[in-house]
Length: 387
Image 1: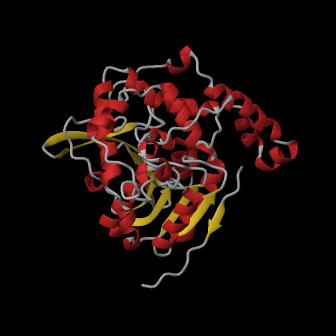
Image 2 (image 1 turned 45 degrees about the horizontal axis):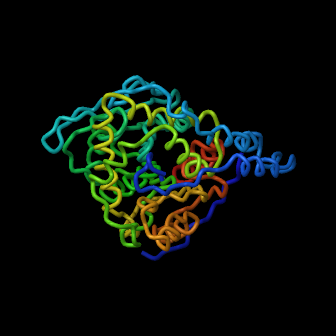
Image 3 (image 1 turned 180 degrees about the vertical axis):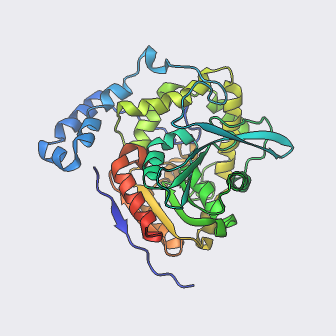
């Protein structure tokens, strides 16, 4: 298990390489020779400190990055991820939005021994409710009711052809879902793009937000203001149509897992790639393009100081995610996605925020080192609402 670094709050008065992530940084392939050298450098003593899981991960990148004709093979899934199994029964919330009848898929996992609290898990851009699988299990065993939706445009939810995507719209959809299942307030946990949504949710519904947890949220800087060029929806769509498993795998290894790889990560590669192999490829790519436009053009960073709920930041410091970074000028590229800096700046901006850093982890700490992540998460939840 890797060690987390906790930073207490100051007192304040009062990514994704194409073709997976259009606009995400392109990671240079890690060569076999380089990775073998790194693994040789992992001494027995260091392996003992980091644990067997870290040593095993170091052994994996060679296989993970090997490009072969079979690298893009795999199952084909439907436009609403038909054929991909979720870790719990999938429910659907039907509602009308923007003159369209839509269905939002979600998981609602009841604990065996309830503690009276509810957690809502908001997934990222290249993630689904299913990718919270380990977190759902941990929270449920700790007594929490867990609700994990697939946002409109993602995974098992509707993919409308014409929808004005905005974070406030997705927040309203989520709030309406929670009302429909009798949840008046909850801890809101958002990862990646889900972190931007969680921030918007907490700003819109502070009385319904018991606590805000941000796991490697994107949007902690305004990419356009810093020099990322304007990008059209047609541009995003053309790039999304090129999505394949090999590109997903390489990008995830570089950004989500800090250069490491484990066989268990492949499931999430196939989850995404399968939708682009299926008959609904165009609808998936088009909705993804609309969503990328939302992410790039609707920053939340300027409103961090207005958050008035207890906030926990959980940051894998090896993350380098920045939308549009790969098409930015070299000088702009170099200064984007610096998560150790962004983490501390964000903690200072959000009144009373607590920061937990994972120095050796990437964009998805909850997947890369679930033991370390979940210990820190449960500790953070307990600190706000002691049992």
